Structure formats: structure tokens, C-alpha cells
Length: 166
Image 1 (cartoon, rainbow, N blue to C red):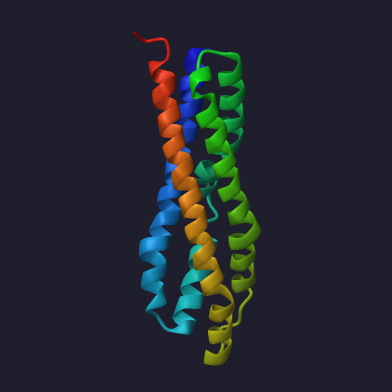
Image 2 (image 1 turned 45 degrees about the horizontal axis):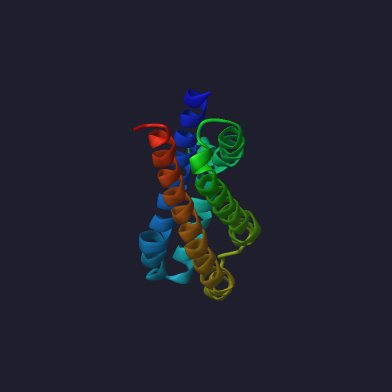
């Protein structure tokens, strides 16, 4: 049981860390870099990024922490790692909040941008205007939520590992 708890926490922590890093990289590097580009270039680049990211390298670490955190909560409640339980639950809440920001705000914005016509400068400008500010704001929110979840999970993993030692 302890090995399953440890593995569950470890993989969930890694997934949360990967998502925190991805969303943070968009917040401090990708979007500021794209902000310096022309409207049509910005829209086309984001369309390509949003299509390319839908793959297993993104989806596994994005989706897998949710059931793993639920399992980690159950295992901590019933098993050895009860000392880590509040931290796991808090991480689950934050991770789910970030998950719902992504699915409720960023993905719909991505889908709308994907349909945008960049045939002339005015349409590209309108598409960018409808997308960029809101997407950047909510990307920062999800980056903070996933980073906080990652930190809480790292602490929970530490507590779990030291529980009963001494």
C-alpha cells in the first residue's frame, strides 16, 4: 500500500510540475515573444501551437494527475500517508481549478482562434484582439494554480516519505 501511495504521489507531482512549467513558460517567454509579432503572424503561430499541442506528450501529464490525485486522497485517507492528506486535497483543489480554467477559458479561446480568418490584416487584428488579452490573463492564472499545486504535492510527498520515520 505504501509503495502505491508513493508512486501515485510521485507521478501526480511530476504531472503537475510539467503543467506548471509549460504554462509558466508561455507566461514568461512564449506570449511576450509573440506579443512582439505582427497580428497575422501572432494568430497563425498560436493556431499552429494550439493544433500541435494536442498530443500525448501534453494530454498525459495534463489529464493523469486528476485521477491520481483522487486516488492519492483515498489512499492517504485510508493508509499510511494521512499526514499528507490536507496537502494532497489542497493540491487537488488547485489542480482542478487550473484544469477548469484551461477547459473553460483557454480551450474555447483556442477553438475560436483556430477558426479565425487571417486573410487580411483587419481580420487578423480582430482575431488577435479577441484572443490575446484574455488568453494571457487566464494562462497566468492557470500557471499560478498549477505551480501552487506542484508545490503542495512536493510537500505532501516529503511528508509522506518522512511519516513514521524517527
